[in-house]
Amino acid sequence: MGFARTAFAALAALIATSAGAAGYVALPGGAFTSVLPADGKTADAVVAPFELRATPVTNAEFLRFVGHDPAWRRDRVAEVFAESRYLSQWAGADALADGTSQQPVVDVSWFAAEAFCESENARLPTWYEWELAAAADTTRTDARNDPAWREKILGWYARPSNAPLADVGGEANIYGVRDLHGLVWEWVDDFNALLVDGDSRESGDPDKLRFCGAGALTLQQRENYAVLMRIAMLSSLKASDTTANLGFRCARSRTGGKP
Image (cartoon, rainbow, N blue to C red):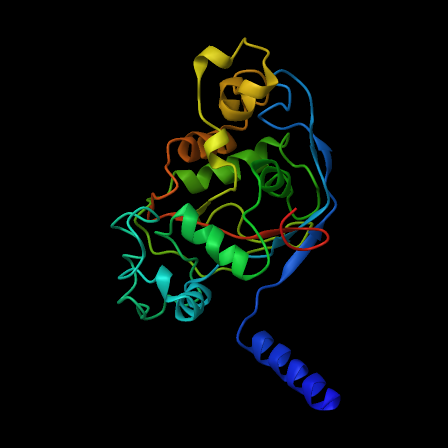
């Protein structure tokens, strides 16, 4: 009986791998200078070691998820968890448009993204985790001071937003993470802690800045306009909102699962 169970587990793992099970890569964490200072002034953010999905979640992966958990189908999801545009780019409630299986899933709410990540014993990354990973290029852990790197990212924002999405799997950064720039915006776990509040800019109140963090945007790294645009966009959303260029990827604490 023990042998049979072991063989079945191995077969299940093989099936999951062949079906495109997600790969997570390890990031070391550490202290870094965020556009949102940890104290609302100049303090570095400190991120614990974590794992991040190498690519955003695809349509095919999300289709498998709603097949296992039909409550997240677009024809069954509760209105409180997703607005009317939820998964509207799909051909049907359980069918994809041709040629879109490896594109990142979009028109997905924060609630649905979090539910998907929980199904992988994971969670959405925090803003600081996403920002740390997104600061890297192919050879450097932090390329943000390179004007050429910043211009390359800004070039994406200049392209029409109605252009068809590419498949996931772009060039990997030094950590092995792909598509952090140039494909879609991405949900983060604490998106609603990035709310812009001008009154908080000089408050010096760390607790308030946890919820009005983007009030510190004028304090440092103003040249990283592309990152600031993401904060402005995320801070404008509700958890049930969806857009045609907003997807997500999942993260895990280094020990796995939720912290």
